[in-house]
Length: 143
Image 1 (cartoon, rainbow, N blue to C red):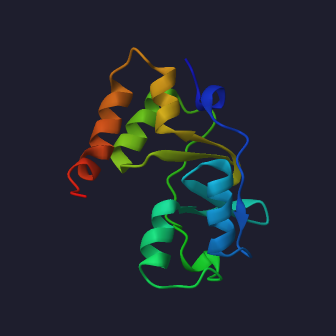
Image 2: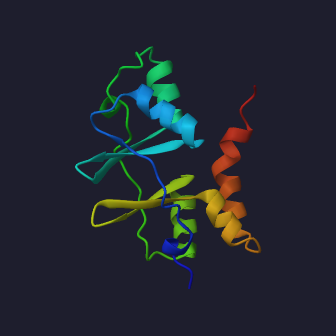
């Protein structure tokens, strides 16, 4: 059985509760990612996504100096390093999330993205189905 420990990204940059949204946005740009975990004394306390920055900051006309804790998502859905790929696919599909922080004893160990699951299980349609259901609403948006 393949576990998330086998496929997770472990080189994950993070912000602390002392940072602001500008610092998070720069890290997203520098690392070409859409999520930055937020730690307090090494413990995962939230995440900030590119969507959080757009909806809670830019659309709310908040300055770049806004504290990260004012906009982070604190309702965290996390996985464990020993969770199976199948369990992660099901969790991510049910929760409608694209990225899953991997935590052990409150400490961030890595992140698994939906794309990681799809690459790992190229012959499985489950990741494709999860991606389709997560992306379904996005595809209906008119530009």
